[in-house]
Length: 391
Ligand code: HOC
Figure 1 (cartoon, protein in one colour):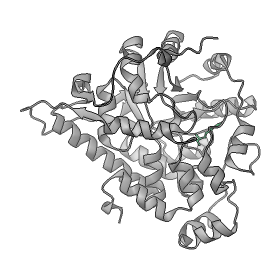
Figure 2 (cartoon, protein in one colour):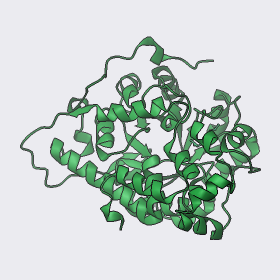
Figure 3 (cartoon, protein in one colour):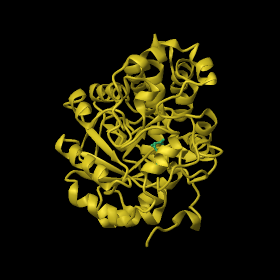
Figure 4 (cartoon, protein in one colour):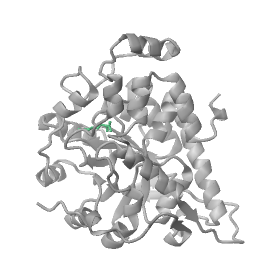
């Protein structure tokens, strides 16, 4: 059925038809006027590729190494919150599909499946855990210890969420957890009976991290998150986490350099899919200067706005070691559960392979900045984007 979906955008269209508006908009939307998200997508559309000619590309190798382990493709599944509210298979589908494809799966602190259940679903694959340091440090650091015990190999510590971004779609839709039946949700539910059937008959969603649920998503997040988190928390995490430690949500050259000096295992340039600070820098634009500053031995991954395999190829060419896809995964999930996530991976894989063949490279290592120009900019960043955290 889903083979008719040829692009991630096609999966999005199916997802929108099948999912209640509040849940779809939570995924599809971003903060405030959604400028960060639209700029990130525009930056990828503005890529101009420069292919070589007459090279034998009958075989291309899409595999890579990321944070000390293998990945069959240069992307992994990003951490996403409240996933089984989008589609009840949630992290079970995501982690099983990632394992089958040989790519990493990252479970969110705000995920809806336990650490142990993800491990049981994807026992031989690479499982990563994403950490929000919340007001209740016992809950946050307890999750870190459980992830270590379950054999998760990489921790992504998210640093762009001292408070929730202004998710205006959620406010307008009255998106709450658990979902409330109101006149408008009932009207919206009538054409989507299967979603509601699944939701009402599924096992209870597991919110490992939240001591209470109830209220709008914004209220819930703001009551759980701690705006006072600081570099001191990074020190604590380093002591209790034995695996790779990666900082996610880095948005400046100076902070990238500081983290490289502190000896973390890598960073993810990300503005949280445009869901936090609107008008934040486009992560893809930060790549050249960050990579120049930190050197090629330090791993710099990127996310935000990836909707096509060519976006991934362009990111690798500009020096990213890896990429993460969040919305693309959720569009697949909402379109068709496990089958939809498999289809999302297939679409991106085919696009990556074809783009590499048409660029006439045989491996990811052959991709260089010379393969890419950007029609709008890759000019040196202005002083603002070197903004500092140091304190
Ligand atoms: C204040 C915390 O990743 C999302 C999730 C959760 C964000 C937490 C914000 O919706 O982007």
